[in-house]
Picture 1 (cartoon, protein in one colour):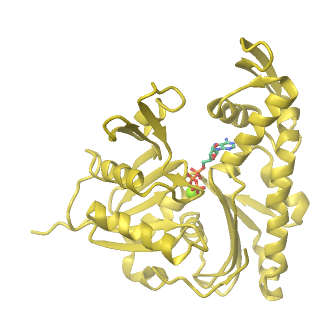
Picture 2 (spheres, rainbow, N blue to C red; picture 1 turned 60 degrees about the vertical axis):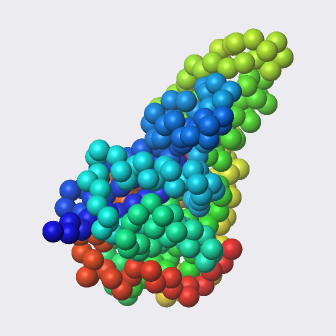
Length: 341
Ligand SMILES: Nc1ncnc2c1ncn2[C@@H]1O[C@H](COP(=O)(O)OP(=O)(O)OP(=O)(O)O)[C@@H](O)[C@H]1O
Ligand SMILES: [Mg+2]
């Protein structure tokens, strides 16, 4: 008997998640590959590879094959997906069908490379779904109606934003300012202001522990360690929330400017809907403290942070796997939506 498996995948810059039809989310791993550059063999993927990031001996390299939401290194991405899909947690079958989310406004070549990757891994059928449509479905929005929703997904590599109405994207924008970029700004700020060199993982720790987009009632600080820019020796320093807020001001402003531009090119009737329905924020980057308040203040529209922002895209792909018939008209249909880059 042929056992057909249907899985939903969110292949993100930071994390890869897999949903198995009938079961739920069965994999949630960092999108990282570690390989031995003497033998060119992959030594670890996912959380095992993450432990090696920035701490590898010279013959081992740990890298992220996804860059700004698209495949940056095809071979490494393929190895990673292959290992994830054939791990013990997933009952592998040669008749596996997938629904995979992809960023909005991908080129034909970028889209094809996602399809090729899954086919080469051995998946029999590949359906692509725009990640914002998946995020909207995964957040429980009824996007089938003739009313518009504005969804913003702040991931690690990109921020995607779109007006969605009647199951399709009307206008959209994508920018490369997201979680990773905020980490770079923190590395830069700590170096310039405190004369201390820190790595990406420490910057991420700072962002999550004391990062904020707008002043919060609770004052926070964090002790970190790095290398003194002058003496070259290890040193400790305290980072305060106000400093991080200052370092993040510029990139967050750029996101807001892009959001305003998107609203500016949205048909007026749909702008009215957005005013009524509010803005929906998804993706890990939307978990930055105070980001909803900042957007509300700048745009003047109610902002909702979706439940479990890190999981809503994969949940959306999962919802499609559970109801393929119902959603078949929204799969692989890349509307001739107005693309404003
Ligand atoms: N509490 C938090 N505050 C701020 N940022 C956070 C928080 N938790 C996670 N993040 C950020 O969320 C990002 C990961 O989000 P997500 O998993 O949605 O990205 P992704 O889907 O892998 O990336 P992309 O969609 O861009 O390809 C990381 O940059 C991480 O630093
Ligand atoms: Mg994502």
